Length: 115
Image 1 (cartoon, rainbow, N blue to C red):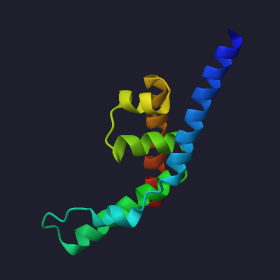
Image 2 (image 1 turned 45 degrees about the vertical axis):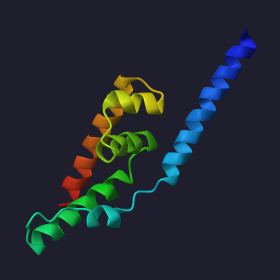
Image 3 (image 1 turned 180 degrees about the vertical axis):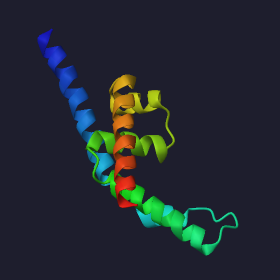
Image 4 (image 1 turned 90 degrees about the vertical axis):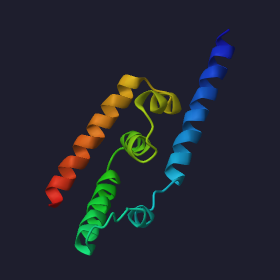
């Protein structure tokens, strides 16, 4: 029985490791996100400010822990809900909430320090 339990744990661990490796390999290109910003008739100055703000957010996310950055990206880039993120990452929904709260708080602090 213990051998079966250990095999299940090893399988789950290897799935998580593969997930984190895929996340690390998926680098988000800030320039491509900026190109996707809709102009909606905004002036060039307003578009430039919006692009600078997006770049500031991405720079701030670069300093987050791996889990915080993953939760942040899955929530705001992939537009996943908290339960979906919890299932993908193999953690509880409460853990996702904590990581998301801390990530948003850190990003806001860093953006506020930049301005």
